[in-house]
Image (cartoon, rainbow, N blue to C red; front, side, top):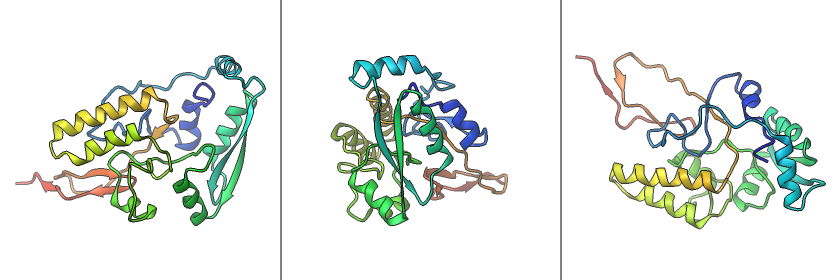
Length: 219
């Protein structure tokens, strides 16, 4: 599927031309980013995708369902159009908010289009998954279970040494790319208006700001 999704075109349609290409769960704007993401995504190669599908026994394609929250987004419409080029039919399942997040938590779905949280899983989003949330059971709130990946995340979250934490997140990004956990698209940019002397604001979750270390450079 990675050879079919036109990530570059998605930037213009979904993100209005703004955003940074992101091929793992760590945003290029995050201090734990490893700096190894290519400047641009790989080009679409429909014939290579068809050849790989045929090799896997899906020369005639297949059908999958993708749940949508309240409405079909432009991003999902693009995914449908892109995958149809290799005879992959994507059926949408429009759900209300509660049912949507319930399905994510269960992990019982074919594929998911998600604004995935970076590995600093925020308390704000964590609360939507329930107080018993665990990375060992649920990946990014999407019900994806991968014990090896989760173990790396827990190692990063549990160490207070920033050098060790950054090394763990580097391992996490390497694992993410090697195992093709998802097809990365773009990360958006959050603008926060402050006075010119304010420093130390860090985004640690989706639209969640950490201001615990904010300081002023003014004399």
